[in-house]
Length: 165
Image (tube, rainbow, N blue to C red):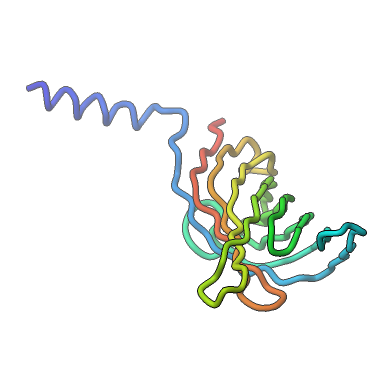
C-alpha cells in the first residue's frame, strides 16, 4: 500500500512541478569567420585571440539543431596555460535565441609524442534568451577540442530548465 501512495505522489508531482531539468548534450564544429590575434610583448610567448566562429549543434536537448555563433577571447600562453572565455548565441530551430556565457581553463599536458597537448575544459550557463527561451535556465560542462588547424569542436553537456508561464 505504501508503494502505491509513493508512486501516486511522484506522479502528481510530475504533473504540477514548475519545471524539471532536461538533459542537454550537444556538439558543434565551430569554424572561424573573423579573427584578430595580438602577440603580447612578454618573455614567455603569450597571445590573445579574438574570434567569431559559427557552427551547428547536433545532439539532444534544447540546443539540438541550433545555429551557434561564438564571440570569444582566448588568452593563451602556449605550452603552459590559458583562460578562454566568451559567449555563444544559439539560434534555435524555431528562431528564438539563447545566450550562453562560457569560461574555460586551458591546460597543456605532455602528449604521447612528447609535444604539449591542450586540455580545454570549463563551464557554461544560460544568461538570457528570446521568445520561449526567455527565462531558460541551465548550466553545465564545456570541452573544446581542435578538429583541424582552424576548426574547434565545442561539446556542451548539462541541464536546462524552461521557465513556465
